[in-house]
Length: 129
Image (cartoon, helix red, strand yellow):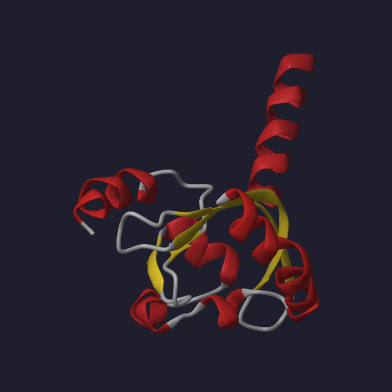
């Protein structure tokens, strides 16, 4: 976990990232952007697991496509659907990486698509003016 000591604080500063989970699906961190997107309280963040935030529609795809890609290639990237505390879908761009040589077997870093798309729209609007 030594590498996580310096990596996680850097990732936590990126506002559009949701968070990072370990091999058991326990939350390693959830920054302010992730807390806002998922409608979570900071006090509960350490109690969250991947199962708490992965949208139910993704369970089949996780087993059918994502997990096999992790086994074969050590990584998977694409769109994932997380859910907020009310069960509403929160689409994200996800990167899932398996790291065998370290204590973290895999981790997810997810970027909030809604924030990214609204930021891009604001930039386009600004450029038009």
